[in-house]
Image 1 (cartoon, one colour):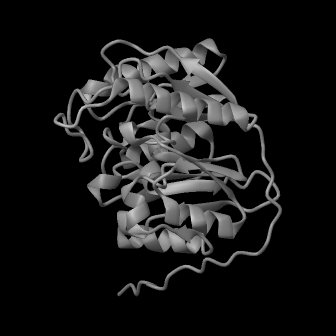
Image 2 (image 1 turned 120 degrees about the vertical axis):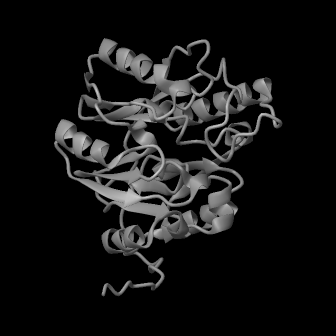
Length: 289
């Protein structure tokens, strides 16, 4: 019989120097963004998107990255693809090579080829996926490894395929709450471990199966555990450069925990995007160099 350790991970972590590395981000303007179908529990056609407000919120996010010294490249939005704004789902790029996306739902299928073509035009070697996966929605790079989600949008076979394509170990985690259908809604990478500090994350334990909770505790004993209140406003759908953490403004408790850990929270309002089940990270692909 397996005995599960149910202790809460310690919030204490040794003091480390946190440094900012310039990041290369990819975004796609919300020109066609709307709730046109229902493929996750957040979507409700009776709660329409305020298109003008969404555009303003997206511009604030883009300008936030630029003000922090990062690069933002733009993918041309395609008519008929309302979720293309969620650039993170377009693939996983590590070291000049990409594992392309193959979406579960036919409504989003065209996005995979669009992002792959855009990456190829910029000299990235894109491997065509055989198995269903939704890019950085379910693959998060940390130093030499990748943590990967399964259960709703990305298959276990895709984890194996990504490990082969990118030549990195992949740790599989099972998502069990349909509100947190992508890994990037339940885990935030705070430090990717490529600088002087060790890899560091925040996560919402109840989004995962018991064995995956154990895996996360073993790998990240000092991780920040996010509350349900902050998880429900997609507080973990955040982007960090190792020091600044851009996150939804409604996640005030998580912002306080980040300050205690030595990070600088940068709150932004993406309330129109949460109507479609996305926020900061969903709108942001990172080109991991």
